[in-house]
Image 1 (spheres, rainbow, N blue to C red):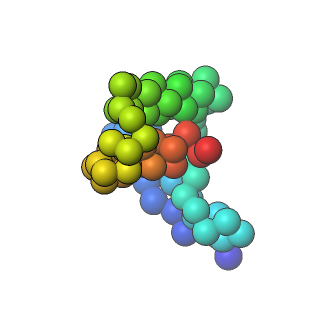
Image 2 (cartoon, rainbow, N blue to C red):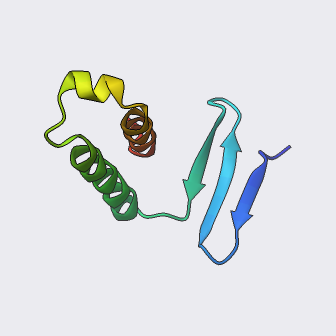
Length: 76
């Protein structure tokens, strides 16, 4: 039996569920594209938190959510 999958037609993305990790993985992407996504996610985190104190970060749930999402993208 094959793993469940989803195609996003027109976007060149095919996602399949890896049953051992219970996470979605994209295929048909080059290593360079994946590294660019990681670099962009980390750039966004830096932009969101630039000149922000730790206490300000703790008080700002929107920025926390944005940072967490970009950490998920970069798989860190």
